[in-house]
Length: 455
Image (tube, rainbow, N blue to C red; front, side, top):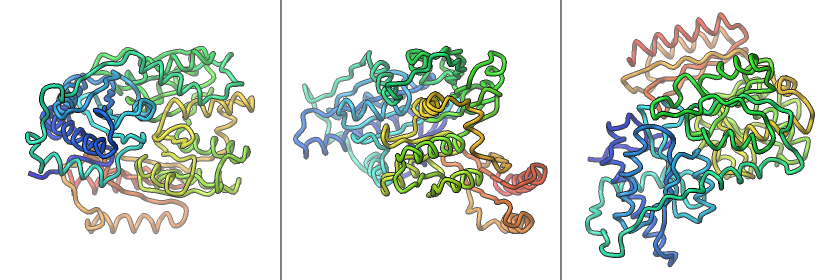
């Protein structure tokens, strides 16, 4: 047996079904522990340790216990943080000098899904070759031959101050001379990992916070709330006459905002606002940021006015981070709200991104609607087509003929982009163009062909 475990963002699937079973989780735990124990011996360290955090999904308990059991059985200690945002685990892995960090989360997916994301001791997500090493260990290694006994077995401890450590870290990214006094914020935590830490951060900095999505019950994470449903903060901002709204996803590694008028401010807007502010302060090396192929063309137009370049990658925050690391860029992100500031972190962090925008609001004494105006969006339609089969989209003749025909129709005033999701069984159909009715029709036509061929 040699099935693939890792997708574009760790292991992910329906909890209690392959690959998100307790049996696989225990084997993955053994494989990670085997790997870090070997590396620790080379570094002449004492017994290594692995940090485990999670979001608020019901299945997080069983996955956490299975991973912990597997790791301890291999002679490695485990530190449990409980619910904490994904970027919080990345930070604590570095801060506590852990040998690896694991997040049990399926991010923005519904509660019945779960996932396993792994960070190295440097706080960065594992590279593809490292994930392949873990896969190979799971399927090809007889761990029974490496099991320690007596005091060689690892132990598990739970730390109580993980939330406090992360809150201090996030607050320290906000300029010391500024505060949020006088600002009213609507905050939607998606009933997820940030339900405690996020209100704490903004309130300690002086804001009045109206809280949504802060009562997790194990099954309501991302359920018509959070970053996938920004209309909630949009409505609440208008109702409470707030200055802005902040919506996080289930593991708080991405954020969507809305201005005081209730208009949505997505990841592209956040990149534009922050990039322009940073270039004005001479804080943007090479006057370049990193985004993905899903970014709106309006982002390019907005940044071009300020002589700011964009490097484009495949979809996925790990690809953005890789491009940033390889070339020394300090700002990157996705339209979906993953925003990375390499000065402050190794992965997308919804809280830090929100604070960076808030710092610009306070420093410039401008409303978010005024800042949002730096970018004019080209109309864009995204359709997610659920599929049961996976074929090379370029080999589906009818689909390619339709795409070619519609691209000729749009000419150079729009574009079409198709891709399989790396985290869900869907094909994403993106159509961009000047006329909303036209691109809606095109998106529906293409989605119908995809459904017919792959559903």
